[in-house]
Length: 272
Length: 261
Image (cartoon, rainbow over all chains, first blue to last red; front, side, top):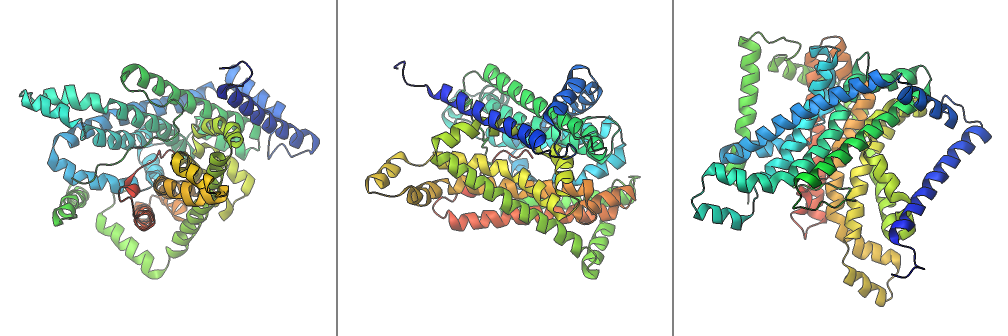
């Protein structure tokens, strides 16, 4: 309103910049002035050099490609299967009653536990990472979609029924559009989880990939490179999630997701 | 109301699953490494529990997960409360924390292992890191959702900030916090197990890793079953506690927050 008052956005930008600067300054002082051993926390210039070497000159590209490739392939497989299963479950009441409590139970089981078994069974190559990533991506999409597909707007449903719409018409015109937002919310979680799946698979056994690189470089006490690889994963994760948010806004243009929302709430349907 | 049918329906797919597992391992040529016979797994589990062989591993994993859970969710609650109380803390920390949230936390586990060392401390630290975000995000949203009129009423009547936090904001946020804690309970186990894959010489994660290199899949499946039971027990305990604590909102404890480790 008035030119004198700072807007909330600029205050936020300043405060964030201050935090980041303070953090960077603390890092510099701890490394250079207090001589923190570089095997524990790399010196800032070592980190920058490692990022330059890895990201720009390309020593990290094969690893980035391996992790991203496995995560994306697993993401696509997991999301497709998750969506297909959700459609089946929501269309048939018998399946819903039988499987929804089971799915809810599966949510509380730490799925990472079977990663080593998958790696040993499928092999040390990329296939095992794709499988783990797909498994991790499957559940969030499924759970989000099942609850959204089974709770469409009742008045719209009644209108379609009154006009003698077929089951398929109701599915395509009422249920699926109502669930589109939830699908993207599920995909956001699924992408983060498929990256985690690929990285955990690489921790178990691999010869390439960012997870492999981080583990190996920590072993060699080359922590700067391990930091740079971790940062690459962070950037990949953030970029993927932002891309899915962007697609969410474009595809489900009639809903407005809260741009700053950090939580993704989705309730499982009570066993009806 | 829970009817008998609510228990029978879910029991059918579990029964079908176990039957299929039994038939596949006995009559089809499924590799016994990929899928050991169910009775072998049950036998291994029973033997391990009876002889006390599994006990130290169970205790190691559970104590690390519980310690990390308490540490991570406690920190998350404190940070969220500070952000809800002070605009400046919120302005400074919100965007950096959202940035860190989108990063796969599991990826830092080798670095944490190097910092903390090859003991129980690393598992606790990793579990705390994975627990932090769901609790943080949910409690922040919960604190912010406090009824403005009620806060104003307290202020007008001279209620202190601390009093408003405990009497207004915490009860409002309770159900959101509880659903965050529910997710965090599983994430604590995930963090612990991944760290155990990397460095441990004890714990259920170690057992799985050890079994998959020595091709002893019955042991791995026994450990996986135990982990599943622990996860389910943890979630159920928190849900049951939630029903008592947030007794005015029966829907509260069935919510789910984002669960990316």
